[in-house]
Picture 1 (cartoon, helix red, strand yellow):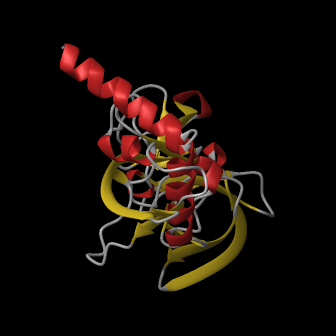
Picture 2 (spheres, one colour):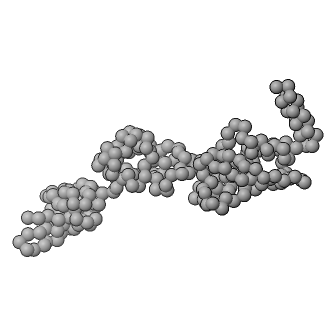
Picture 3 (tube, one colour):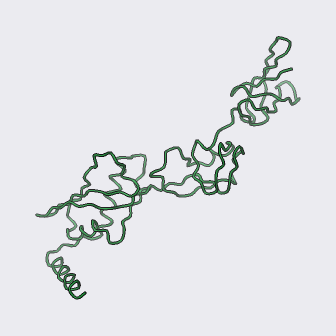
Length: 236
């Protein structure tokens, strides 16, 4: 214990005597990594990138033996591994007549507000605003088909059961083929004839689903089958 204390004191004296000891090495290294990640992934804003180090990280402590004028450079990884998640960075540092290379472990996150389920959403049900919320989450290692706007999701149908607090992805939802209020062509089949008329959908409808529609020249409501995004059919 005494030996370690003496070594620590001697080290501090050496640093003080040589004018070394980089101020805020964590901050300098964090900014370096943020810019490195942003250059590789311009779609990630620098302010959304978060970098953290474990307490006592050897690579960070090594920077303390360099002064504030030291040049820090990340050595590119040619194995094409993404600098996201838990990452090992190769770092080159040079200052004065000294230079060194060492490894630094860091956790790199990209925080964004994404659409999350605020409660269970059952398969096949229409998604309501009360079932959604925006929450800041790490999207660094997520596929890019998540949502950042609740309005895009509201009214769509859940393709699967979506548990509470789940990040929503586009494969989890589907839009109706025909939306309520949309103009449609009504095809009436009977006696070898097809009569076309223009009308309006009174409900959302998926492919082959039966929905209520009305003709523009009538107030009468009729049931029709969805056959395309613009057409429904009625068989007499």
